[in-house]
Amino acid sequence: MAKISAKQVKELRDMTGVGMMDAKKALVEVDGDMDKAVDFLREKVLSKAAKKASRIAAEGLAATSINGNTAAIIEVNSETDFVSKNEEFVNIVNTIADAVAANKPATMEEANAIEVDGKTIADIVLEATNKIGEKISFRRFSILEKTDNDTFGEYIHGGGQIAVITLIEGLSDEDVAKDVSMHVAAIQPKYVNRDEVPAEELDHEKKVQTEIALNEGKPANIVEKMIDGRMNKFLAEISLNEQPFVKDNDQTVGKYVGDKGGTIKQFIRFTVGEGIEKRQDNFAEEVAAQMKKD
Figure 1 (cartoon, helix red, strand yellow):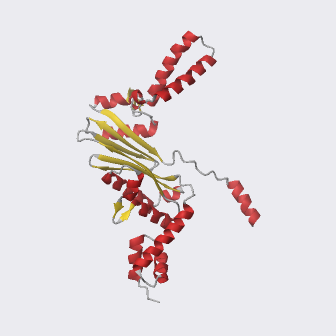
Figure 2 (cartoon, rainbow, N blue to C red):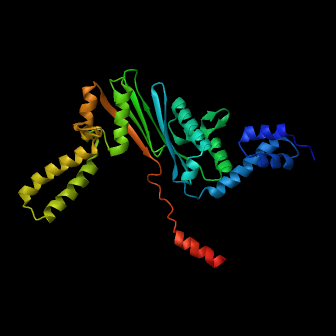
Figure 3 (cartoon, rainbow, N blue to C red):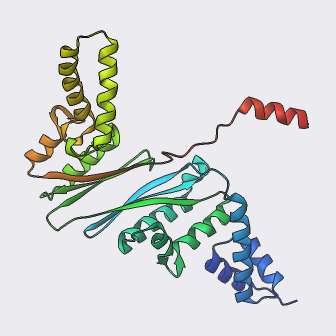
């Protein structure tokens, strides 16, 4: 059996990101052959990751990164909120965000194939799953691009639970753009303006409002006028430009930006775990089940 040195263990740890004991065991298993040890650990990582694949990862962090005229927003998930506060996990999230902004991938497949210091993002996530001990998932990303005359506004809320990027045309004031992103994080508009609302959504809402009005016993000629008013209110509530600005309710967001000489072009808002069906744990049932085992 070859003697395994501390230098070899450190080298393998740096290459693969595994713990010291795992690195040493791998080297012992393959009699000190570094290449075989890497393959051994990759197989081990894949095996562990496969076992975790069915777990639900709905916690984690959303992050943003700006690289010149390109901005990226991403979400990386973990199984527990505890891990999402781990410094190593935070560094991984920021590394992925920077890599996406720098490389501008078009698909998740392209994003996962991006290399950072000789490792693909897919490999980085896989190694994190093995090392941290939870399912780690790079779930999604989106990219915005601007011209030199435009401005990005970044805002992160709750330590990374909500992330927003806003693109303001014709404006160089980052503070104004950040204010708009802060508003988007707090109020959660669905569209920049009412012209973006899909016809299907309008038809659905009009149908709902008509049924409500008719159920109130209003005459048909009155119902039509009521619907117009309610639809106008509905559109104003979901359109960013028409919402009262969170920092000054006396003016709309559109007016706030317009008075500064800018126009809101686009925004993207990520909330960690949105759309993921989280596991519902019943603590009382768990305790009861454990007592039966004991």
